[in-house]
Image 1 (cartoon, one colour):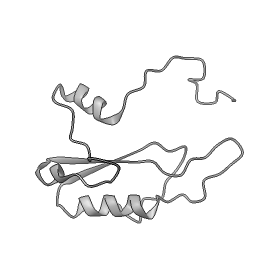
Image 2 (image 1 turned 135 degrees about the horizontal axis):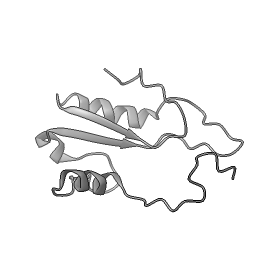
Image 3 (image 1 turned 90 degrees about the vertical axis):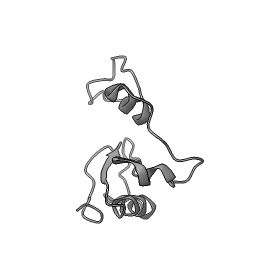
Length: 104
């Protein structure tokens, strides 16, 4: 690759979002949905909901088909937003994303 991101030759420790939040707060690991679906019954009792979504991937010489999230990801964000809680959307994406379909 081109190494454009500046980290091509560095060892960068990797951590998932749940472990990162637990490390910052010094508390327990956040509740994650059971199985492969987005449903998390613990969200109704949460102070803050973190929705982690991964838009379509791009690669060298290939663009993403859209700058928007998949409809399923937008539905998850809207579902949790309707609970009246603060919702943080974390994305791993190689460029801009149109958020007007779901942001407040």
